[in-house]
Image (cartoon, rainbow, N blue to C red; front, side, top):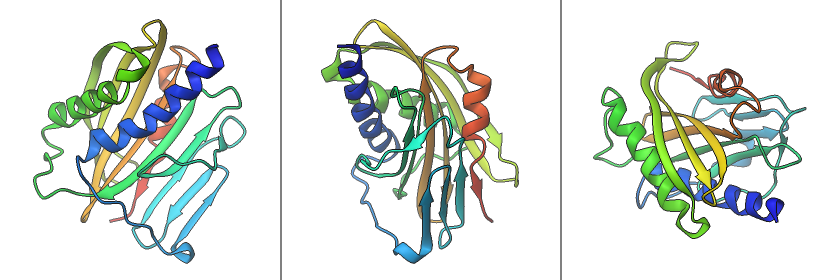
Length: 193
């Protein structure tokens, strides 16, 4: 029963990423030669985006949700890391308004979880951060109850590159692993200038 709930959770988390970032955004498939997607590494050479994660902890899941380019999870479903690359809407909220961007993410997560009866979505933190190569992104941390009882924490980064919205998120049970570890995993995002 718990495994069934967790499977549903990940289906909805993927949907959430799409909803939270861009309502009505179109998804564009990149040429295979421009993209490397293997355990522990996603690289889009054309866009100049790279994400690495610990492949021993999370293996690549072949079933991507709409808008996702990465979905890697632990054998027992959590933690899970996802990455979306979507078209940026003309009226996208500036990153400097980080609270609005983070609230949009939280609201999208909440909307995607209605069928699972998830509750208590609380935005615990939002801030503007600088990635290792100087690119700015919005960081957010949201806690919530999957199915109304199973506690989860989702950390996320949202950034823009040209006409694209890039979102990386990682969801786990609180303390398994600690938020600082989840943060390290999402902060591995590299967006070339």
